[in-house]
Image (cartoon, rainbow, N blue to C red; front, side, top):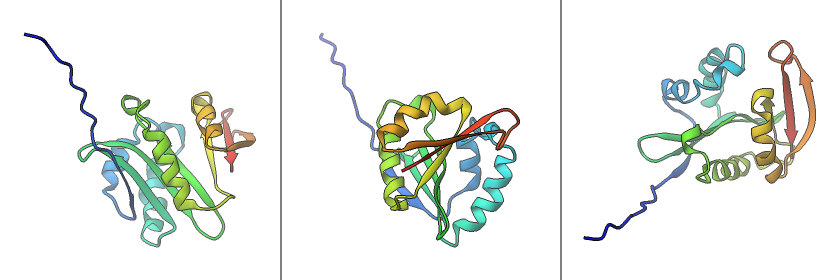
Length: 155
């Protein structure tokens, strides 16, 4: 009997939410939360409070059961920012980050959009951001944590 390898491509959806179970977000972002002081407080209070007003949006990439990636956005008259952009390691190299970024930028729809990147993730994200036409504007030392740079990219 011959064996046949079958590759099944899972269905991935990219949806915009203005409400979501915050425990799901906390769980999905636990790996990067330590990069920002008081991240969970920011997420649970500041981000959530502005989610209902439409000044914040969440783009989730899911396969129905799992969060495969997410983007937390701030959209208001003063700022269009990707606050948090994350794809867990096990879902990278599946084009999820690319689709998530395209969806995020279509929501921001503003040439003054920007994202900041913690120094620990900078070398990993720099080529990705450059491929989406972001440009490094500046790097600020000790913005969120002592002696750690935060890198600012804008369109």
